[in-house]
Length: 153
Image (cartoon, rainbow, N blue to C red):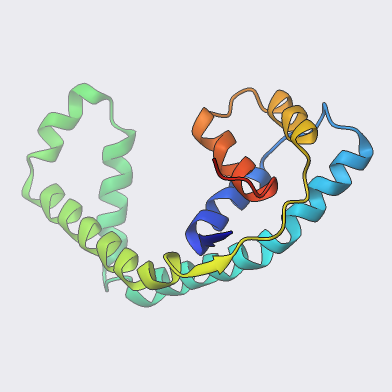
């Protein structure tokens, strides 16, 4: 099954934080085995993203970054006044342009098709993985199932 590097990176990040307390030892081993091929692809994609962030960071962006962080920390009722200031508008515009530039830079790598690793986790193991992570949404569970169980319905 083909998938994209961004999808693998998203799945790996989710699995990296996953709990496996309801799984047997052998199932945990299979789970880790299933994650290993994902890890290499995810780490390479993350390095590409970090390089783009570093290379494309605008000069003097620290000030805009601080303004945005302060804005995000404000209570909601104070944000209306703050967002109207010219300084905040400039910071928000600079941030939006920076994020867009990074996303444009990594778009080809994010959408690059790669062969998904062969499914190494059984449906039963996947079920116990879901039981261990009740906070997962249906979409997150489907993402994991598609890659680790190598099934796409």
